[in-house]
View 1: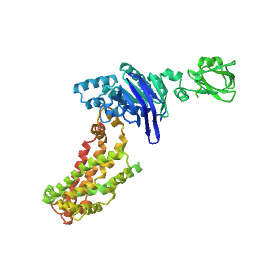
View 2: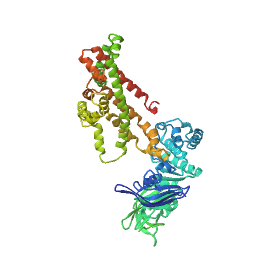
View 3: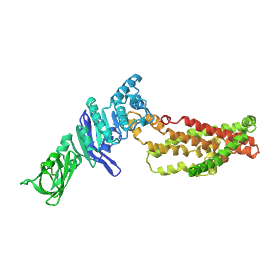
View 4: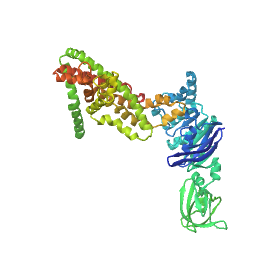
Length: 317
Length: 264
């Protein structure tokens, strides 16, 4: 069942945020909406949540048309980039909020909130206020609060965007594990391709209010559907008319029919990889990413004459 | 060090000459001959009536302007509509216009010969020179404070908490009571303090609309001036002290309403 988005359009004044977007999100999946800022990914998430009303199109959640359903009755859990913690309530009260609104029995609330705080590793922080928590703890609290109402879908809007790099990495793998334990359909918005690849089992790449490609992280990386997708999900360099991943540029000392002559412009040692800047005979620049050992064998210096070959490259119309 | 000391002396001196010295003098002159004269002045029927009217007018002004002020602030901050800037400017009008002008305007509208007041008079409703007029003037002059204190707080807290509450199932009414109101409480509290202060201390507008009928349409400030003009210094000072104590009481009560997390 999952989520179905059909021909959804949304404008903010002159700005087109979503342009006839259609999308299937399978039940129980962990999907990332990936794209640059202004690509419409957050708007799409908010339309699914009911926080924005689409100008056209429909949103179906678990087989029910929810296009005109207010967010209160959609059964979605939403996590905001800046936590949206209820500042005047303790951690416990924050997590219990949705259950109290639903007038669940006291005993049931107590049990459920306790379990959730255990799950997000905040059991010892129940009586603290959000201001007394770190960013990562606040976001875990927000997640527990969203999960408390047993949502049919969990929507996360750049959930790790406001956290520092270490905490972000930690929470990503934690979210993955959580999803394996509790496979509720989850949609995560991010502009970070590494985050999308690390967390999601399906990626939706968006650009200019449209969906560019849907696929697994591997499909998106290995067979990008457009020049935009290829350059957004990983490094690219250009060789004649073709786009190529720098790690697919082969450097050879001897040329043959399949190679192009080039001159070494510079060599940068970046730990496990070595970056070689090259200039083709036509005067175009490109760069290659080669393993340390290969670099040592080639022993490249600026000014060296070499031959390059693209082991895999793609041309987009 | 010298510069800091000088700064401090200037600040203290300023407050001392303008606030501490006059207020202390009033207190000293009131209680110079003990509590006896104070009590007899305060227990005078005219003084008691003025006290009653002032408290009543302030109470109505606080309740009306708090409810209206929060509503108005929400509309100004959260909604977008043509004429919003005009509404925002209108809210400040009571601060910009002299209270005496406000009083005159109220007489023109609600007075016995005013265009609205003449109709009311047919039904025997009298606004000017009676309690409703005093309340009206008090509400009018103390209108901007809650709006002006709450609006920036609303803008600062943003809408994310309210949206989060909505996704958790809270209706807009529940969201208002459980999320918005507790979040803006510091702004509301300060707005209420300012509203109360203005309502208790208003003189000009009330002087014009009340008719200053001793024992009937006098507020405490009018009573103070009346006693002062009658060379009854003890009466004037005693009523002043009552006004000051009312204001202090409000400040103290609002302090108790401060949000929890600020106390930790």
